[in-house]
Each structure stands twice: as structure tokens, then as C-alpha cells.
Image (cartoon, rainbow, N blue to C red; front, side, top):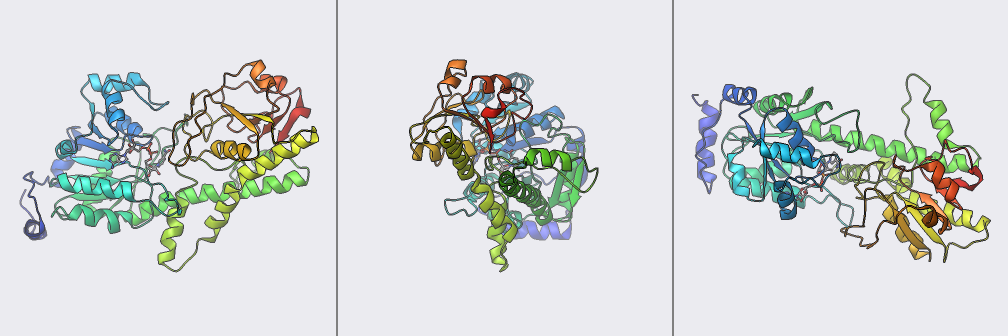
Length: 465
Ligand SMILES: NC(=O)c1ccc[n+]([C@@H]2O[C@H](COP(=O)([O-])OP(=O)(O)OC[C@H]3O[C@@H](n4cnc5c(N)ncnc54)[C@H](O)[C@@H]3O)[C@@H](O)[C@H]2O)c1
């Protein structure tokens, strides 16, 4: 296709700036649409974790071939051997897409040159000072820049503050000498994965897409449109970035509100779970949120603080987020206090007591322990002299984490184990647990999730927290 004046200008400029001159021809809009229609567009996914692997399943399921790139060699080897390391992605699926030649995993960045689209799904955690840790996104952008080809589409999916794609990713990619919107295309499309959820999948969750320019948006929307049921195009990358942050702030703030009300209602002798259940019968204007032992996971405890950080650049403080963070992070402390009180009523001290934590994962039916309040609970209880064990059917041992190394093994859940502990804390309400059975064999149960709500006998042993 003949180049536009702008394209020729940008091309010659990028040639001057560039340290490398990729030879690949720029695809026209029609060629891109055709490659998507025929499923000949090759999709590269960087970061094969909780987000990247389900995304691979979605693109492969829609008929595309995918290249998965990860710096973690162990993950690449496992996938290449047909093994999954994520509970809800079965190994049979990995074997199938590998056997069909639809997917391969690599840690060789040169292979990214063969991809038409490159989707970034790397972590966006907080630093120790609770500021955005953009190092993963930055190093990924540099890696792509080193191999960027003309005509490629790059999409950032990692959750981040509004402005990241334009202010951080674009300049790094353009250090290749190629120009966004002319030589390559750039978009942001937030991941809305909710591991463990069975009523929605990556395909059925609408995909918000914002482009750096109109053409980037068209191409990115067309690509996702071929793989998911509904694409929601928005006017800019910033709107797409902000939409994702809004979703997570909304959850964080509402969970904090219900956690605060839990403490108040408890003092008033009112069961917060019964209150939420009653309020939920209103057919409009109310969405239920549930209290718990604190926030966990890679998103809700972290992402809102990306916005807090960015707000400072605009001389604003995000007071709702700060307050919600304060309340939510104080929840493990509240649970420990409730445990100490409950033991005290039974003439026992927390110091020296044996405590069994049920559920290490941050939420039910998943194996993800990132930011899990259970870890916090274990550390706080140990600090106060308790002897702590845990059971989690999905977490056989505690892995080494960035800031924790508990080095514990999941205790087998037998009647003798339960009986041997002074207190059982239900920290995660996994469906696999038989709560009737747990209460029957326990001396004291501190329930942070209302998991025992339907348990009929032994209710005097249950304390809600
Ligand atoms: N987990 C969720 O439920 C969820 C939901 C929505 C959005 N997100 C967002 O998606 C992003 C990814 O989260 P995740 O849960 O998949 O993380 P993850 O830790 O499960 O996976 C990230 C992967 O990226 C790899 N990686 C790190 N640096 C890399 C690099 N420079 N090059 C290549 N690979 C690299 C890691 O080895 C890991 O396999 C984050 O921004 C997160 O906030 C996560």
C-alpha cells in the first residue's frame, strides 16, 4: 500500500534516530484486518502468569497462534513440557495447544520479532515505600524496543496509573527509532481477570481498549474483537487505564466501608452478614460487599495506590483511597484481637496457644497467596507467642515470597489435628471445607468469612471476626 505523507516523514525521521532498521513492511489497515480475519496474525504474550496464560487460552481458542515469552525459565520449561502451574488452567489445555502448534513458550526475546501483536502482562506491584514499581513494565518495554518491528501492535494490559502507556512505554519503544502510530501501533487494554470465577471467562468479560491514535485503536479493537465477545473502545489509553483503576478503587473503598461497619455492628451486637444479606434484597441502588480478614491478591490492595501516587503530580490527595487502605490493612489486627478475646473468655492466653489457620489463599478456591491476609495473621499471631499451623488444600507449602518466608507445610485436616488446636481461624472460605465437621471437632472457631453461617450445631464455639 502507498505510504501517506506522514508515514513517509515519520519513517525517514525514525531512520535518522534509529540504531536499527527493521526490514518488515508496514501492514495496511486492510492487511491487518485480513490477518485477524484469517487468524494468521501471530500474538506474542509477555508474562505468562495469572493474566498471561488465560489470555493465551483465549487467543488460541479463537484460532490464533501464540508465542508466550517469560523471563522465568522454570515456567517456560514447565509449559514446554505440557504442564500448567496455574490451578484453573489445566495441563491438558497446555498439552493440546502445544500439540496443535498453536502455542509455544520461550525466553528468547528475538522470537518476538515474528509476532504481529505483542501483549504485555507483567507484574505491577508496589515498592517497599508503597509507590508504583514500574521496573517490570520498563524492562519489558526496553526488551520490546530492542526487537520492535514495523507494523507491530504493542498492547499494555498490566494494571497501572493513567498516563503510563503514553509517558513511560511509548518513549521507551520509540527509542528503537520507530514512531508510535506510524511505524508501530500502541494501545492499552486492562485485564479484568478474576481467577476462580466460573460465571465469566476472559472471552465473556467485555474488553476495554484505548489506542494511542485512531489506527492503533482500530487494530487493537479488531484483534480483541476476534477473541472476546465484546470490545469497548474508548477515546484514549488514559481512559482505559483510569477505567481499570476505578474498578479496583470502587471495590477497595466499598470493602473498607463494610469492614468498618463489621466492627461497629459487632459492638452493637448485630451480625453484619445478616445485615448485608437483608440490604441486598433491595432490587436497585445497592451492591453487596462482604467483610473479611483484610484485602489480598495482586490487585485490590495495590492498584488504588498507583492512582494515589499519580494524584500527587496534580497536587491532589486521594482521601477515600487512603482511608480505605487504612481500614483494610487494620483488619488482620482486628482478627488477632478477636482471637485473643475469645481465648481469654476461655481462660487461655494467646501466648502459647495453638492456632490453626484454615485457608492461606487470599480468596476462596484459588491457590494465589499474594498479599494474603492469612500470611499477615500468621506473622502477627507468632509475634504474640502463639504456635501457628495452617491448612490449605491448594497451597501444600508456603513458597518464598518477596517479603515473607514462613517455611510452613499445610497440615493434614484430620479430627485429631483440629482438636489439637486451641483455636481454628477460618481465614479463607474454600468450598472444599466441610464447615459442619470443622465446628464439630474444634474447641473454638473464629470465622472471618461467615463460612459457618449455615452450621447448625456447636454455634457457641463460633466467634465471628
Ligand atoms: N492476577 C489477577 O487476577 C489480575 C487481574 C487483573 C489484572 N492483573 C494485572 O495483570 C498484571 C499481571 O498480573 P499477574 O497476576 O498475571 O502476574 P503474575 O506474577 O502471575 O505473572 C507475571 C509474569 O510475568 C513474568 N515477568 C516478569 N517480568 C518479566 C519480564 N521483564 N519479561 C517477561 N516476563 C516477565 C513473571 O515471571 C510472571 O510469570 C499486573 O499488572 C496485575 O495487576 C492481574
